[in-house]
Image (cartoon, rainbow, N blue to C red; front, side, top):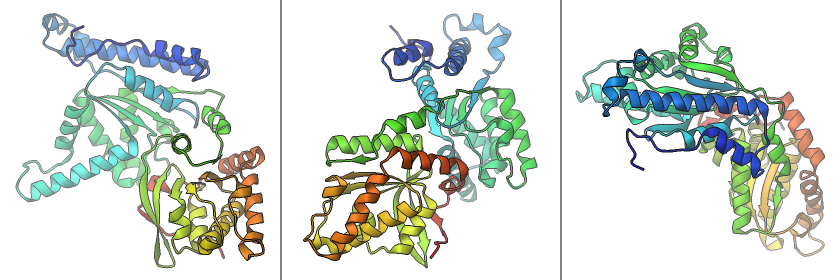
Length: 410
């Protein structure tokens, strides 16, 4: 079939959703089906609108229709975590028959916008750009690259972002950009206690005009259900183990882009290779071969509610310092009620094979007990209850800070 106008033949999103239900990938959910229907209607509007605007053989005829000059109203889906918003966004993005489309985490998009603004200002200073105001050219470039924008995790926490959103999206919508977004927050709750929020309010009105607001009120937290089926201690170390760790990471972080971070502890920098969604991921060597101590582990536990450790080796007296650090690390995470995902060469009972009688052999009995307890349903359920009661823990990453200075408790 000949493709034209950037459009491709496709099944409906409802058909794809039904197929996933049929093969057991998702549970049939009435609230999700309402959103699916709304997304299918949006896809039909996008296809019709795009065909009307193109100068195809019949384009001049369709262009006489007044609807051809009207903007397509997008969709803003909000609801609690684990209700399937990201899954539905993925289905929409795969289904919508448009080539110039972009699917991005909202914080990553705004970081890109800020970078483009900075580059334009530099170009203006050097005489390579004519416009003083960077917003219009940045918006034009973004609209040219993608006229269907899909945002996951729409959340505004940065004042620099808040101050430009109304002008930026006014220009994007004027260029015909269609917005589809998911968020844990209703539009009226965005940037609720932010600095100078009154300057942000016009954006909320703009958003409501250009995107239908739709709650996803499913009673089931599917993300927690999926996590409950995932093992948190994986052994032995194989390619499949690595894949399962990656899958757990994607579920825990909800697909948020990972980045490196550095914690400042007593004037020193502790590197964290991967951070996303309140979780941190390390290799064993990052935590136990490096010269880290109690304060460093306390800082990690204070900042991240979930910790991933990849490829823990079998230990013995030839690796005394890494063994001592691992014992201390597990003690710290246990006392902090952290959630721990690990891949290891052996089960906890076989992880230390040192000579009987050495200090680490005695101390490791406690580590074994704690590693086993931290795999239990009671431990994980307790972690979930504490996470709901203490929503601030592990959320500092939303501020996009590269260096944090936690205050460890002695």
